[in-house]
Length: 586
View 1 (tube, helix red, strand yellow):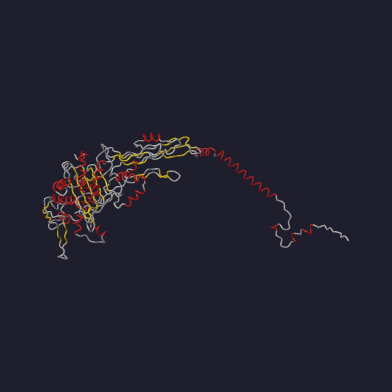
View 2: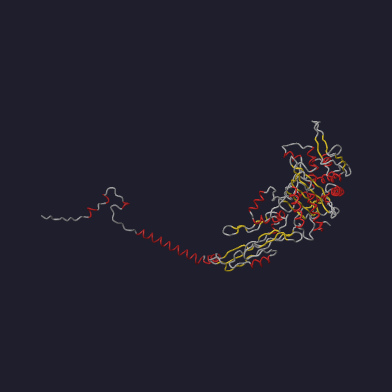
C-alpha cells in the first residue's frame, strides 16, 4: 500500500521568534534581527569629513604654490649650493735676520706641490692651479712647517689644525697656537677665513663656484732671536748634558737695553712638527720620557740658584752701608756658631774652600761662602743684612716675581722668609742658619733662568730692570721703558769689578777670552739630602766696558763629582759668536 507524503507549509512566525520574547537576547550579536537601514545623519557626517579633507588639501596646495612659492623656490635653489671655508695663510715667523723659522705649505697630493706662502696673492695663485675638475680638496688648509734647527721648539711652539667630523664638515675652522710664540702671538699670526659658494648637481659635481669673501692672511712676525746663536747654545747644552749626565739645561742671552732675547733654549725639547701633526706614538714617548721634554726650563723651570745671588747680596750690603768694599773678612773654610744650650755642640757652616782674607771684590771672584754668611746674617763684629732686607733687595731685582716675558707659563719662584718657613714647616721658627743659607742662594731659594738673566741685566745696566721680550722691536721704535733701581752707580761699579775679577783671576776663568771682555758669576747649588746632584749656573754680561748683553746658563742635576758645568757651555757660545756673529761682541 502506498503511503501518501504529506507537505507542510511553514509560517515565518514559527521560525523567527519575537525578539522581545527571546530569552537572553544579545543585540550586539544581531540575534533576532534581520537588517537596519543607514541613517541620514551618518551620510551627512561622512560627506562632511570628505569635504573637509578636500578643502584642506586645496588650501595647502594654494599656500605652497602661490603664497610661499617664491620662498620655496629660493630654498630649492639654495639646496643646490654649498658654503665652504677658504682657509687663509697663517703668518710667517722669522728670526731677527729674516730667516724663515715657520712657514706654510700645501698638503702633498697628486695635484699639489709644497709651496711657502707669504701673501694672499701667492695663495690665490697656487690654489687656482691645484683645483681638480670636480673641485675636490681646493679648500684644504695649509700645513705648518718648522725649520729643522735644534733648540727652537720651546720658543716657536706648535699649532692645532682645524677639525672635521665624520661627514667631512669642519667643526673647528681655525688653526690655533698651542705653545711658544705660536700661542703668545696667535691673534697676530691667525688668518681670517674666507667663504666660497659652490653650485653642485645631484651627483655632487661642481657646476660653478664663486668667492663670497676672500681670506685675509695672518700677520708675519719677526722674533728677536738669532737662530744661529740659539742653535749653538742648545747644542752646547745638549753636548755637555749627554757627556757628563746632566738631566737637562737651559740658556738665555738678552739685550739689557731693549729686553730683546737673542737666544732662549731648553734641553731636551720636543718636535714642533710632531705635536702639530699629532703623531700619537711619538707624543706618548715624550710623555713617558723622564727628562720631561715638554718643560721649557728657561721659563717654567725652578732651580736653587746657589752663588749667582751673591752679587745682589753684596750690592745690598753696600747700599745699606753695613760694609765697605775694602773691608776684609777671613775665611778659614768655615764659621762656628756657639750653641747656648749645648756648648760642646756648636753649629758649623762650611765654605767650599778656605780663601783667607777677602774683600768684596775678591769674595765675588772666588765665591767665598764665609764672606756672604757674614754680610747676610752677621758674624762676630760684622753686621748682617738680615732676612727681611735680603728679601727686599732680591725682589727689587725681580726674583720671585714674573718678568712679564711674552711667552706663556712663567713661574714665580721663592725667596725664603720666616713666613714661608712657618707655612711650609709646621710653624717652625726662623733660625740664623736659615739666613746664612739664603744668603748663598740655598735653603728654599728657587728661581727661573729668565728671572736670573732679568736680574743680571739690571745689574749690568746700573739698575735698569727691562722686560724680556721675544718679539723684535721695529726700527725707529722707542726703547721700552724700564724700572730703575735707586742704588748709586758707584756701588754697581764695585760689583762689576768683582764679576770681572771672577773671569780674570777667579773661578770664572773659563770665560776669559781675547775676543770680548766678560764679567760673570758662577753658582753650584747642592740638591737633596745626599747632595750627590747639583745645579751648575753661570750668569754675567758682555762687553764689560760697555755692557749690552746679559746671559744665564743652568745645567740641571749633574753629578757632584763632575767639574765641567755651565761655564763650559757659555765659553763655547762666546767662541762661536766671535767667529760667526762678531757684531754682538763689539
